[in-house]
Amino acid sequence: MIALQAEINDGSYQPGKSIAFIVNKPVKREIFAADFRDRVVHHLIIKKLTPLFEKTFIHDSYACRLGKGTQLGVRRVDRFIRQCSRNYSQDCYVLKLDIKGFFMHINKIILLAELNQFIECKYNNSDKIILLELCQKIIHYNPTRNCIIKSKRSEWHGLPPDKSLFHSTNNCGLPIGNLTSQVFANFYLNPFDHFIKHDLGIRYYGRYVDDFLIVHQDKTYLKSLIPLIKSTLQERLGLALHPDKIYLQHYTKGVEFLGSIIKPHRIYIANRTKGNFHAAIMKQNVIVRESKPNKKQQAAFLSSMNSYLGIMKHRKSYKLRKKMLFTTLSSWWWNHVYLSGGLAKFVIRAKSIKSKRGYRSSSN
Image (cartoon, rainbow, N blue to C red; front, side, top):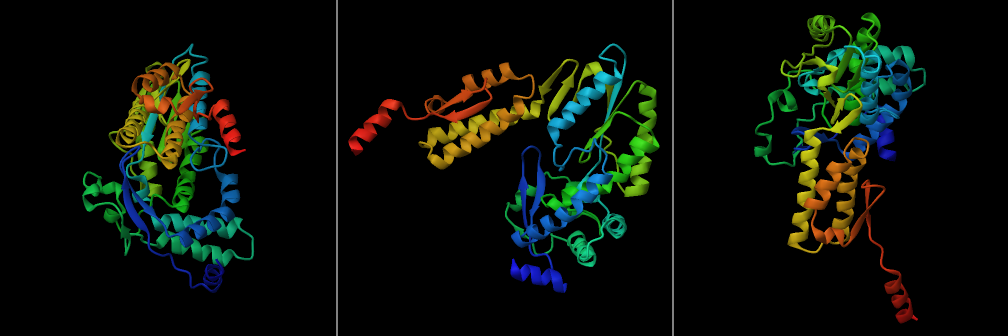
């Protein structure tokens, strides 16, 4: 830490090697894990900039922000639909759009120019020059050079070129996996958020990373927004709408957003989350068949199962959870864990009082 501090202060700091690998859940993605010392620098940058960013971000930008997240995003969209339809008594429509290969097409020149101007105007601490230099080094750094490949090369097969930094054009693309990438992505789209909310005067708008959604009473008006949004993204930010992910429907049809399906009076879990939960259960069953799970594997079981249950308990999913767990999960687990809070959380079974007393007696 002392050596890193010295490098930052004298300007000699340079980002190190990243580890590249592929993940398949929830979808196939290319991840670059920065070196530990670089992650320290990322947190340093974001800690300094986040309070200033928050003053400029709109309320309904949900990703990578304290007090926001997917749960708030789903609740807000549910509220948008109820308000716009006057409690489901009038017509309203939902337009959902997606940016194609978002992280891989973020223009570093545009991002750095906006960030430099922002820091010059908003940041007043004495280390402004150091902060500007760090941002420049992090943004311009290309992690594909001399990276350590952890996944097999074959695992990149099937990953579209617009989702890989190895195929990004010059001066484009931020690595998925860095804290700075997530926060800078919000900053990059902040002018677009203000264009939608303030220039166009749209009341019901929300965005999570590159997924955004507009609710309005007039379907024709929403249709007219698509080419306008498309041209604005392209001309101002060098981004393109995904042509296969344009959704425009009456609110009664329901809309899938952030892993949930939002319908009048109810919110369901999306099919992809159901499938992932089932796969996670089957994975735990395989562990039991191969050998008796050790303490580490039991802790991993709790972590995996409770993460899904933690999401699903906020949705209309009690019957689904009951069916999937009681018909699929191995009986071995039921002898060692139990459910609490109405199928909301797994807890390890404690030893019986009798066995504890016996242990104490024998110890004495």
